[in-house]
View (cartoon, rainbow, N blue to C red):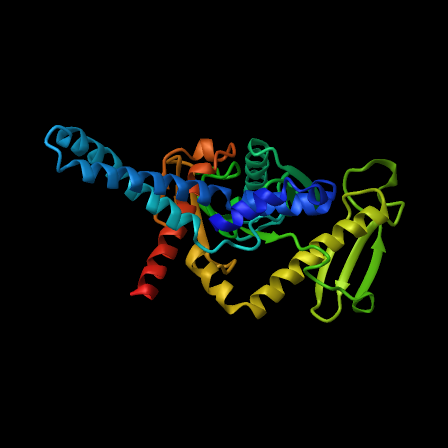
Length: 349
Protein backbone atom coordinates (compact mmCIF):
# COMPACT_ATOMS: atom_id res chain seq x y z
CA UNK A 1 0.00 0.00 0.00
CA UNK A 2 2.87 2.36 0.78
CA UNK A 3 4.44 1.56 -2.60
CA UNK A 4 1.12 2.30 -4.31
CA UNK A 5 0.91 5.58 -2.36
CA UNK A 6 4.31 6.66 -3.70
CA UNK A 7 3.33 5.71 -7.27
CA UNK A 8 0.12 7.75 -7.05
CA UNK A 9 1.93 10.74 -5.53
CA UNK A 10 4.33 10.69 -8.47
CA UNK A 11 1.46 10.37 -10.97
CA UNK A 12 -0.21 13.51 -9.61
CA UNK A 13 2.78 15.61 -10.69
CA UNK A 14 2.87 14.29 -14.27
CA UNK A 15 1.67 16.84 -16.90
CA UNK A 16 -0.47 14.22 -18.69
CA UNK A 17 -2.32 13.53 -15.42
CA UNK A 18 -2.53 17.15 -14.26
CA UNK A 19 -4.06 18.16 -17.62
CA UNK A 20 -6.58 15.32 -17.65
CA UNK A 21 -9.26 16.14 -15.07
CA UNK A 22 -10.70 12.62 -14.96
CA UNK A 23 -7.29 10.97 -14.50
CA UNK A 24 -6.29 13.54 -11.87
CA UNK A 25 -9.49 13.05 -9.86
CA UNK A 26 -9.21 9.26 -10.06
CA UNK A 27 -5.59 9.25 -8.88
CA UNK A 28 -6.38 11.82 -6.18
CA UNK A 29 -9.24 9.73 -4.80
CA UNK A 30 -7.13 6.55 -4.85
CA UNK A 31 -4.39 8.40 -2.96
CA UNK A 32 -6.86 9.77 -0.42
CA UNK A 33 -8.33 6.30 0.19
CA UNK A 34 -4.99 4.87 1.35
CA UNK A 35 -3.37 7.96 2.86
CA UNK A 36 -4.43 7.39 6.49
CA UNK A 37 -3.20 3.78 6.83
CA UNK A 38 0.06 4.65 5.02
CA UNK A 39 0.71 7.61 7.37
CA UNK A 40 0.02 5.38 10.38
CA UNK A 41 2.34 2.71 8.95
CA UNK A 42 5.13 5.25 8.49
CA UNK A 43 4.65 6.46 12.05
CA UNK A 44 4.79 2.84 13.25
CA UNK A 45 8.10 2.32 11.42
CA UNK A 46 9.52 5.41 13.17
CA UNK A 47 8.35 4.13 16.56
CA UNK A 48 9.88 0.69 15.91
CA UNK A 49 13.15 2.30 14.87
CA UNK A 50 13.08 4.39 18.04
CA UNK A 51 12.56 1.24 20.13
CA UNK A 52 15.43 -0.54 18.38
CA UNK A 53 17.74 2.43 19.03
CA UNK A 54 16.67 2.63 22.69
CA UNK A 55 17.23 -1.10 23.25
CA UNK A 56 20.70 -0.77 21.73
CA UNK A 57 21.49 1.94 24.30
CA UNK A 58 20.57 -0.29 27.27
CA UNK A 59 24.06 -1.77 27.28
CA UNK A 60 25.58 1.69 27.94
CA UNK A 61 25.36 2.42 31.71
CA UNK A 62 25.34 6.18 31.05
CA UNK A 63 22.39 5.88 28.65
CA UNK A 64 20.42 3.12 30.38
CA UNK A 65 17.97 5.36 32.30
CA UNK A 66 17.21 7.45 29.22
CA UNK A 67 16.78 4.28 27.12
CA UNK A 68 14.34 2.77 29.61
CA UNK A 69 12.26 5.97 29.61
CA UNK A 70 12.18 5.95 25.82
CA UNK A 71 11.10 2.30 25.74
CA UNK A 72 8.38 2.95 28.35
CA UNK A 73 6.92 5.81 26.28
CA UNK A 74 7.20 4.19 22.83
CA UNK A 75 5.94 0.67 23.66
CA UNK A 76 2.28 1.70 24.30
CA UNK A 77 2.38 3.86 21.15
CA UNK A 78 3.59 0.87 19.12
CA UNK A 79 0.68 -1.26 20.38
CA UNK A 80 -1.87 1.51 19.74
CA UNK A 81 -0.62 2.09 16.18
CA UNK A 82 -0.73 -1.63 15.39
CA UNK A 83 -4.34 -1.75 16.62
CA UNK A 84 -5.29 1.34 14.58
CA UNK A 85 -3.73 -0.13 11.42
CA UNK A 86 -5.59 -3.43 11.88
CA UNK A 87 -8.88 -1.52 11.96
CA UNK A 88 -7.90 0.62 8.94
CA UNK A 89 -7.15 -2.52 6.92
CA UNK A 90 -10.52 -4.16 7.59
CA UNK A 91 -12.58 -4.75 4.40
CA UNK A 92 -14.63 -1.67 3.50
CA UNK A 93 -18.35 -1.77 2.79
CA UNK A 94 -18.54 -0.98 -0.96
CA UNK A 95 -21.65 1.14 -0.37
CA UNK A 96 -20.21 3.41 2.34
CA UNK A 97 -19.58 6.30 -0.06
CA UNK A 98 -23.14 6.29 -1.44
CA UNK A 99 -26.12 8.54 -0.79
CA UNK A 100 -29.15 6.80 0.72
CA UNK A 101 -32.85 6.36 0.19
CA UNK A 102 -34.52 6.66 3.60
CA UNK A 103 -37.94 5.04 4.05
CA UNK A 104 -39.91 5.41 7.31
CA UNK A 105 -43.29 3.75 7.85
CA UNK A 106 -45.66 3.76 10.82
CA UNK A 107 -46.12 0.27 12.23
CA UNK A 108 -48.18 -0.97 15.15
CA UNK A 109 -49.78 1.75 17.23
CA UNK A 110 -52.08 3.65 14.86
CA UNK A 111 -51.98 7.45 15.24
CA UNK A 112 -49.27 7.28 17.89
CA UNK A 113 -47.01 5.33 15.50
CA UNK A 114 -47.55 7.93 12.76
CA UNK A 115 -46.63 10.74 15.16
CA UNK A 116 -43.45 8.89 16.13
CA UNK A 117 -42.63 8.31 12.44
CA UNK A 118 -42.72 12.09 11.96
CA UNK A 119 -40.45 12.58 15.00
CA UNK A 120 -37.98 9.96 13.72
CA UNK A 121 -37.87 11.72 10.36
CA UNK A 122 -37.21 15.03 12.12
CA UNK A 123 -34.42 13.34 14.11
CA UNK A 124 -32.72 12.27 10.88
CA UNK A 125 -33.19 15.76 9.43
CA UNK A 126 -31.31 17.20 12.42
CA UNK A 127 -28.60 14.53 12.11
CA UNK A 128 -28.22 15.37 8.41
CA UNK A 129 -27.92 19.09 9.19
CA UNK A 130 -25.06 18.36 11.60
CA UNK A 131 -23.20 16.57 8.79
CA UNK A 132 -24.11 19.20 6.17
CA UNK A 133 -26.03 16.61 4.15
CA UNK A 134 -28.92 17.51 1.88
CA UNK A 135 -32.35 15.87 2.36
CA UNK A 136 -34.67 15.71 -0.64
CA UNK A 137 -38.25 14.62 0.07
CA UNK A 138 -39.58 12.02 -2.40
CA UNK A 139 -43.06 11.28 -1.11
CA UNK A 140 -45.07 11.30 2.10
CA UNK A 141 -48.44 10.13 3.29
CA UNK A 142 -49.77 12.11 6.24
CA UNK A 143 -52.05 10.79 8.98
CA UNK A 144 -55.10 12.62 10.30
CA UNK A 145 -53.23 13.71 13.45
CA UNK A 146 -50.29 15.36 11.70
CA UNK A 147 -47.94 12.39 11.63
CA UNK A 148 -46.62 10.30 8.74
CA UNK A 149 -47.99 6.95 7.64
CA UNK A 150 -45.00 6.84 5.29
CA UNK A 151 -42.21 9.20 4.28
CA UNK A 152 -39.47 8.58 1.72
CA UNK A 153 -36.46 10.86 1.17
CA UNK A 154 -33.02 10.85 -0.39
CA UNK A 155 -30.07 12.01 1.73
CA UNK A 156 -27.06 13.26 -0.21
CA UNK A 157 -23.62 14.07 1.14
CA UNK A 158 -20.24 12.74 2.19
CA UNK A 159 -20.29 9.01 3.13
CA UNK A 160 -23.96 9.08 4.11
CA UNK A 161 -24.49 5.31 3.96
CA UNK A 162 -21.49 4.66 6.24
CA UNK A 163 -23.31 6.54 9.03
CA UNK A 164 -26.96 5.83 8.24
CA UNK A 165 -26.84 2.08 7.49
CA UNK A 166 -27.15 1.29 11.18
CA UNK A 167 -30.70 2.70 11.29
CA UNK A 168 -32.47 -0.06 9.32
CA UNK A 169 -34.94 -2.00 11.46
CA UNK A 170 -37.87 -1.56 13.83
CA UNK A 171 -37.76 1.41 16.20
CA UNK A 172 -40.04 0.93 19.22
CA UNK A 173 -41.40 3.81 21.29
CA UNK A 174 -42.78 3.62 24.84
CA UNK A 175 -44.63 6.68 26.15
CA UNK A 176 -48.00 8.10 27.18
CA UNK A 177 -49.82 9.24 24.00
CA UNK A 178 -51.45 12.66 23.98
CA UNK A 179 -54.83 10.93 23.53
CA UNK A 180 -54.37 8.69 26.59
CA UNK A 181 -56.64 9.94 29.42
CA UNK A 182 -55.51 7.52 32.15
CA UNK A 183 -51.76 8.11 31.85
CA UNK A 184 -50.91 4.61 30.64
CA UNK A 185 -47.69 3.98 28.71
CA UNK A 186 -48.32 2.61 25.21
CA UNK A 187 -45.88 0.81 22.92
CA UNK A 188 -45.79 1.67 19.22
CA UNK A 189 -43.32 1.05 16.43
CA UNK A 190 -42.06 2.38 13.11
CA UNK A 191 -39.92 0.64 10.50
CA UNK A 192 -36.90 2.33 8.98
CA UNK A 193 -35.18 1.18 5.79
CA UNK A 194 -31.89 2.72 4.64
CA UNK A 195 -30.97 1.76 1.07
CA UNK A 196 -27.72 2.76 -0.67
CA UNK A 197 -28.70 4.85 -3.68
CA UNK A 198 -27.92 2.90 -6.85
CA UNK A 199 -26.46 4.55 -9.93
CA UNK A 200 -27.32 3.68 -13.53
CA UNK A 201 -24.18 1.54 -13.70
CA UNK A 202 -25.27 -0.47 -10.64
CA UNK A 203 -28.68 -1.51 -11.95
CA UNK A 204 -29.76 -1.89 -15.58
CA UNK A 205 -33.50 -1.27 -16.01
CA UNK A 206 -35.13 -2.02 -19.35
CA UNK A 207 -37.87 0.33 -20.54
CA UNK A 208 -40.02 -2.67 -21.52
CA UNK A 209 -40.00 -3.81 -17.87
CA UNK A 210 -41.66 -0.61 -16.64
CA UNK A 211 -45.27 0.51 -16.43
CA UNK A 212 -45.59 4.22 -15.71
CA UNK A 213 -48.94 5.64 -14.59
CA UNK A 214 -49.71 9.30 -13.90
CA UNK A 215 -52.32 10.65 -11.51
CA UNK A 216 -53.33 13.84 -9.72
CA UNK A 217 -51.22 14.60 -6.68
CA UNK A 218 -52.86 15.14 -3.31
CA UNK A 219 -52.04 17.23 -0.27
CA UNK A 220 -50.52 20.73 -0.08
CA UNK A 221 -49.22 22.25 -3.29
CA UNK A 222 -51.43 25.07 -4.48
CA UNK A 223 -53.68 25.25 -7.49
CA UNK A 224 -52.01 22.45 -9.44
CA UNK A 225 -53.01 19.83 -6.85
CA UNK A 226 -55.84 17.58 -8.04
CA UNK A 227 -55.87 19.32 -11.45
CA UNK A 228 -52.67 18.19 -13.19
CA UNK A 229 -51.43 14.65 -13.66
CA UNK A 230 -48.00 15.38 -12.22
CA UNK A 231 -47.77 12.47 -9.76
CA UNK A 232 -46.08 9.33 -11.09
CA UNK A 233 -46.39 5.65 -10.18
CA UNK A 234 -43.68 3.35 -11.59
CA UNK A 235 -44.15 -0.45 -11.55
CA UNK A 236 -41.20 -2.74 -12.27
CA UNK A 237 -43.04 -5.65 -13.87
CA UNK A 238 -40.48 -8.49 -13.34
CA UNK A 239 -40.35 -7.91 -9.55
CA UNK A 240 -43.69 -6.20 -8.91
CA UNK A 241 -41.86 -3.33 -7.18
CA UNK A 242 -43.99 -0.14 -7.11
CA UNK A 243 -42.69 3.39 -6.47
CA UNK A 244 -44.80 6.57 -6.32
CA UNK A 245 -43.60 10.17 -6.28
CA UNK A 246 -45.75 13.30 -6.12
CA UNK A 247 -43.58 15.81 -4.31
CA UNK A 248 -42.79 17.90 -7.39
CA UNK A 249 -45.27 19.79 -9.59
CA UNK A 250 -43.42 18.52 -12.67
CA UNK A 251 -44.23 15.04 -13.96
CA UNK A 252 -40.69 14.73 -15.36
CA UNK A 253 -39.09 15.56 -12.00
CA UNK A 254 -41.36 13.11 -10.19
CA UNK A 255 -40.45 10.41 -12.71
CA UNK A 256 -36.72 11.07 -12.21
CA UNK A 257 -37.10 10.92 -8.43
CA UNK A 258 -39.17 7.74 -8.65
CA UNK A 259 -36.49 6.08 -10.82
CA UNK A 260 -33.84 6.90 -8.19
CA UNK A 261 -35.87 5.10 -5.54
CA UNK A 262 -36.67 2.19 -7.86
CA UNK A 263 -33.01 1.68 -8.77
CA UNK A 264 -32.05 1.63 -5.10
CA UNK A 265 -34.72 -0.92 -4.18
CA UNK A 266 -33.76 -3.19 -7.07
CA UNK A 267 -30.09 -2.79 -6.17
CA UNK A 268 -30.80 -3.91 -2.62
CA UNK A 269 -32.80 -6.92 -3.83
CA UNK A 270 -30.06 -7.96 -6.26
CA UNK A 271 -27.31 -7.50 -3.69
CA UNK A 272 -29.20 -9.66 -1.18
CA UNK A 273 -29.72 -12.36 -3.82
CA UNK A 274 -26.22 -12.47 -5.30
CA UNK A 275 -23.89 -11.64 -2.47
CA UNK A 276 -24.27 -14.17 0.32
CA UNK A 277 -20.95 -13.16 1.88
CA UNK A 278 -21.96 -9.53 2.10
CA UNK A 279 -25.29 -10.52 3.62
CA UNK A 280 -23.40 -12.57 6.21
CA UNK A 281 -21.15 -9.59 7.00
CA UNK A 282 -24.18 -7.30 7.29
CA UNK A 283 -25.69 -9.81 9.70
CA UNK A 284 -22.78 -9.32 12.07
CA UNK A 285 -23.32 -5.55 11.92
CA UNK A 286 -27.01 -5.25 12.63
CA UNK A 287 -28.31 -8.68 13.58
CA UNK A 288 -30.28 -10.29 10.81
CA UNK A 289 -30.76 -6.97 9.05
CA UNK A 290 -34.40 -7.95 8.66
CA UNK A 291 -36.72 -4.98 8.92
CA UNK A 292 -38.94 -6.94 11.30
CA UNK A 293 -36.16 -6.97 13.87
CA UNK A 294 -36.47 -4.58 16.81
CA UNK A 295 -33.21 -2.67 16.93
CA UNK A 296 -33.94 0.14 19.37
CA UNK A 297 -36.37 1.20 22.10
CA UNK A 298 -37.14 4.85 22.88
CA UNK A 299 -38.54 5.13 26.42
CA UNK A 300 -39.77 8.70 26.92
CA UNK A 301 -40.92 8.51 30.60
CA UNK A 302 -37.39 7.49 31.61
CA UNK A 303 -35.55 9.57 28.95
CA UNK A 304 -33.88 6.29 28.01
CA UNK A 305 -32.76 4.87 24.67
CA UNK A 306 -31.58 1.26 24.30
CA UNK A 307 -29.93 -0.21 21.22
CA UNK A 308 -30.64 -3.94 21.49
CA UNK A 309 -28.00 -5.04 18.99
CA UNK A 310 -25.08 -4.00 21.21
CA UNK A 311 -26.81 -3.65 24.58
CA UNK A 312 -26.12 0.09 24.79
CA UNK A 313 -28.37 2.26 26.98
CA UNK A 314 -28.23 6.06 27.02
CA UNK A 315 -30.23 8.28 29.39
CA UNK A 316 -30.30 11.21 26.97
CA UNK A 317 -33.22 10.44 24.70
CA UNK A 318 -34.09 14.14 24.51
CA UNK A 319 -30.71 14.85 22.88
CA UNK A 320 -30.97 11.89 20.50
CA UNK A 321 -34.37 13.08 19.28
CA UNK A 322 -32.67 16.37 18.40
CA UNK A 323 -30.41 14.45 16.03
CA UNK A 324 -27.44 13.77 18.31
CA UNK A 325 -27.03 10.21 17.05
CA UNK A 326 -23.24 10.21 16.74
CA UNK A 327 -22.52 8.42 20.06
CA UNK A 328 -24.81 5.58 18.92
CA UNK A 329 -23.28 5.43 15.45
CA UNK A 330 -19.73 5.44 16.84
CA UNK A 331 -20.58 2.64 19.31
CA UNK A 332 -22.07 0.50 16.50
CA UNK A 333 -19.03 1.07 14.26
CA UNK A 334 -16.66 0.14 17.11
CA UNK A 335 -18.68 -3.00 17.89
CA UNK A 336 -18.70 -4.07 14.24
CA UNK A 337 -14.95 -3.49 13.86
CA UNK A 338 -14.29 -5.57 16.99
CA UNK A 339 -16.45 -8.39 15.60
CA UNK A 340 -14.55 -8.28 12.29
CA UNK A 341 -11.19 -8.35 14.07
CA UNK A 342 -12.32 -11.35 16.13
CA UNK A 343 -13.45 -13.15 12.99
CA UNK A 344 -10.12 -12.39 11.25
CA UNK A 345 -8.19 -13.65 14.29
CA UNK A 346 -10.21 -16.88 14.34
CA UNK A 347 -9.54 -17.49 10.65
CA UNK A 348 -5.83 -16.80 11.10
CA UNK A 349 -5.68 -19.28 14.01
